[in-house]
Image 1 (cartoon, helix red, strand yellow):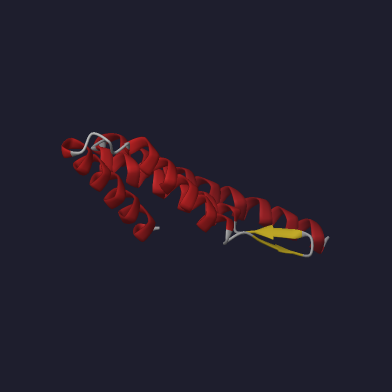
Image 2 (cartoon, rainbow, N blue to C red; image 1 turned 90 degrees about the vertical axis):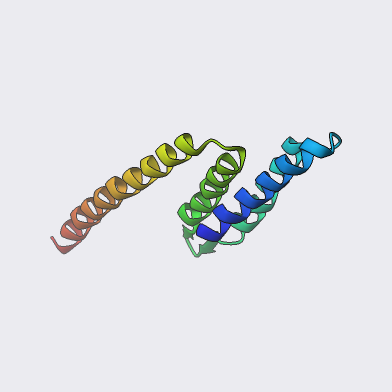
Length: 111
C-alpha cells in the first residue's frame, strides 16, 4: 500500500511539475492513467475459490491508497491525512465488527 501511494504521489507531482513548463501536459490524463493502472493491479488480487471471492478489500485498499497518493501529489496534505485517519478508523471498527459476527456464526454452528 505504501508503494502504491508513493508511486501515485510521484507520478502526480511529476505531471504537475512538468505542466508548469510544458502546457501541453494534461495532469488529468496522468491521473486517469494512474486510476486505470491501479484498477488493473487491484483486479489481479481478486480471486474466486469455489463459492468465495477474496481480495476485494485488498483491491479497495490499493485503489484508495492510490487516490490518497494523487491528493498528496497535488498538494492536498490535510485532506490526505484526514482520509488516511478515517480509513484507519473505519478499518479498525469493521475488523471488530467482523470478529463479532464470526463469533456469533461459530456459536450458532456449535449449537
